[in-house]
Image (cartoon, rainbow, N blue to C red):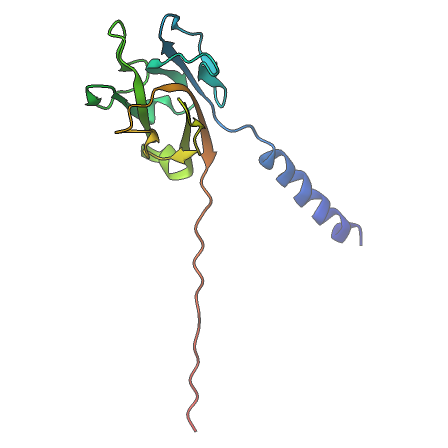
Length: 172
């Protein structure tokens, strides 16, 4: 009887620490008009400003758990999409007074099989947009709207399950 009662308790003890583990993090910062580079923040904190009508001009992902497997790029006013860059590189422009309008961030390699990188932007006149993931456009393009702030986070992918159906046929 003791063994039967101990088994669920052991299973619970094993599952609880795994489910409460903190997700991996990213470290990033924003270059904002008339403020310059703001201090680094850790996901899912806000980089940039809200309520100040200041445009983001660049995003830099400085590091994090899976930084080596990240790439990102920026859509800049009057330029369009800039090339993909890796962490520690700047996506956007500085010293040109060009607003950042959107970014795309993606995770590849082995971490990309288990984790999604999600992003959401605070955009002029629209506020916070919904979270997007895995390289989708975060912000707007073709609308001339400035991106004012951004939040990033890594989220575990849920494993896909397949259901197998077995059919039996009987003959008479």
